[in-house]
Image (spheres, rainbow, N blue to C red):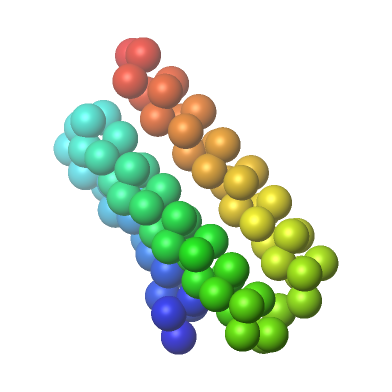
Amino acid sequence: QQLQRAAVSIPSNIAEGSARAGTAELVHFLSIARGSLAELETQLMLAHRRNHLTRSVLDELLQLASDVNRMLVRLQQSLKAK
């Protein structure tokens, strides 16, 4: 359940930020989304330690999380530059 909540929180925060009045608020909600992503990564590692995920699945999911984080950072940087 925690994994699912953290995963849902990421796009939810992006959507909420994009619906706000200004760019600064979107940047703030992107930061919150990155926090949820970090929480998700932690929960994935804990799931692996408890033998709920194989190492290969964990590595694949962490790579995807890293890709998402990179996109969020670039979007934040782009918005801040405006």
